[in-house]
Image (tube, helix red, strand yellow):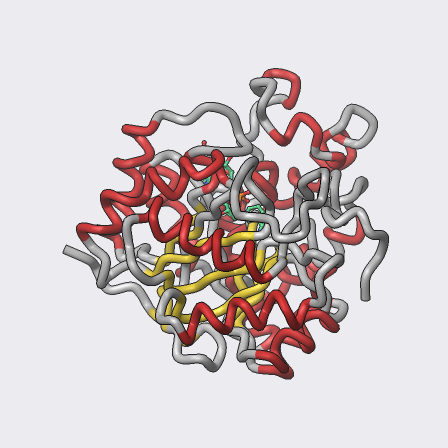
Length: 343
Ligand SMILES: NC(=O)c1ccc[n+]([C@@H]2O[C@H](COP(=O)([O-])OP(=O)(O)OC[C@H]3O[C@@H](n4cnc5c(N)ncnc54)[C@H](OP(=O)(O)O)[C@@H]3O)[C@@H](O)[C@H]2O)c1
């Protein structure tokens, strides 16, 4: 039985989601091996708790993440809002039409959009994706063509709502002119606030919802991340610029400031970090639905408590300048298109 969890409209296209989502990436990707049985237990518990806005991508585990979700998704299809993404091409996925010699990693050509969607639907075992994101913009294809193909998917009944990930404000406006966009998903947290310069204001202006990814700073903001050199080789965080030897002590001292606030309230630092993201709803008067990721039931349950955390004015003031003091860029491949800065 689902317990009631507050819901809200994400954007103006009619998509209703719980106030907090679940990031499923770590169950198959980025943070080293995960126990599939434990992940399925987390998914089942998420269903019980009403955490039914699930975030995946075809790229995560080369399709394995979508396959992992499929059995539970089918048993509770009506209750789950399934979001997946395309655009970071899987090896061999999708038919190219131009015989280019080397496959690109980022792909947004219309033929690929259709092929990627069909492949995701097959892996997920469903006939319609609730929210379909462009994972990264393919700057070699007019964005209007990519979004036009995504709009075709809506008309074909294969997708209900469209989203974009890691776009600029200008790209969001161009895409939104082709087809209404329900949500933008990009990194937004206590240590990553660059979206506030132009993307978040554009979302508010256009009535587009925001889905902050990595709201816990990929675990670092919880103070619970083990030393980076003890993480398994496949763990993305080993190459996270902000966790490298030359800056980690500085950045860890910033997390200590979050921990100090948490200790004074007798709560885990994770709760303060996630609650700060939830508090953006009030600050920006915008639907903001973070998708913290976890492979553990206890953390799933803990993260729900962030919805009930009320900041004092002093706490918010203390946290306000933290992001500006972080050292290191937030991602080693900030521009995954390799095409230089975009506007
Ligand atoms: N659009 C994009 O380009 C993009 C990029 C990255 C992520 N995402 C999406 O965003 C979701 C969330 O981001 P993320 O997983 O990168 O980072 P995150 O949610 O900021 O942090 C996840 C990490 O924090 C740990 N954690 C979770 N809850 C915790 C708690 N209460 N206490 C201590 N540690 C806790 C998790 O460990 P355990 O798993 O061991 O619990 C995991 O290592 C992903 O699952 C994915 O769906 C999208």
